[in-house]
Image 1: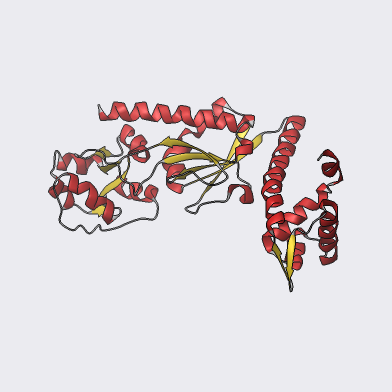
Image 2 (image 1 turned 180 degrees about the vertical axis):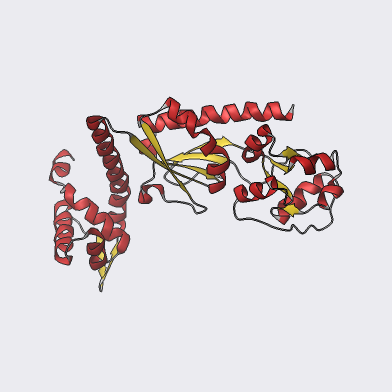
Length: 306
């Protein structure tokens, strides 16, 4: 095994990954800014060294075979880890700031994470955060992210996942509207301009005995936008308690009567990262800080309920 590894031409591995992704030598060459001939030679060298073909040739297309898939599963995370190590080494040598690339839902980033970034900077001034917000499920290894804050049911194949928080759904309004409604019934709340998904409103109002069809005046692809509209008193909003917590604490929003509701339509938040990065010190620092902040938020929410 050691002898085979010593013969493995490591410089061909990025080319191998590019070919596997593109299934075409010419397209892979363009992505790598190499000539078609150079890419072809690197693949021949790699296959000759490992001793077996990694792709099936089908005309101009190269289709990765079972052996190639097995090698790809090992190579992609290894190359990502090497890139992380090089970045960390460069930062250590120059004294520069390290950067963690994470991805999260826009609503979670805007309403919960960003207001807490100041405390992260105080705790870890040498570790910068690059936050990507996306509604789509991001391939962490392929897109070069260290971790994700996801909403879902988990787990995700090939990734380490830890449940951060299950946050129930509550109804909220601007303070002046909430004061006018007082201890309003579900029927009275249903008569207000409703913001958010009809299905969630229907389920929440049913807890209070109201089962007539509801027609919200607006729905939003992002809960952060819906809460902004609620703060501007456009209507009554329905959202995860966690996302509304800071606005409730500051008085920008007020909770309406009705018990918090757990719904499968709003699954838990998760911490997700590639298994090979779980022990990387900058990522461990972010993991521990996030769970600490989640506990702080739990305590804040308990106090607001009381």
